[in-house]
Length: 229
Image (cartoon, rainbow, N blue to C red):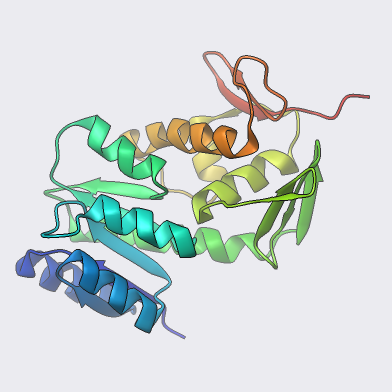
């Protein structure tokens, strides 16, 4: 069955362009032109992924992202014309999985959509339950717990944590983490790993200076701490 994508942008030409390329790639596309409409369409259509412009009239993209994350872990790709990196990082910290800066290639949008959806599907083919250092992830139920307490993770955070938990003690570079969760490595995209790690640490109540779960290996990347013998 074809995956359904929600495209949210107030620029009609962008909506038409992205829709045309996604439909040509075999996706079903629904659209919205402003924030509150996007939330209504999302609740009615239940898409598998959302492409969301940050600069929307009325309720902006950051507020839409924040609202979606209260109820769903649906993957979100942000579209932004904002130059400042801080704006993009705010969106990632709110739970977006990726961002694309305007102007963009519609083929790149299709590639990013396919990559993120492959991640979710690929996770189901691995061991259904993985655990280490009191962290347990159940892929079938899409739940993650630490010391028995359930965590509220986005799709990207869940898959990233699962990869680290599967290989406790192994050091991953940012590029390896992206490749390991079936990502396509873009220079800017690779740097977003740091934001997702920051969000995971916050949800795990982990201190980066005295890590119990995710340790920074300076100049290299990250690793999940092994259980103490």
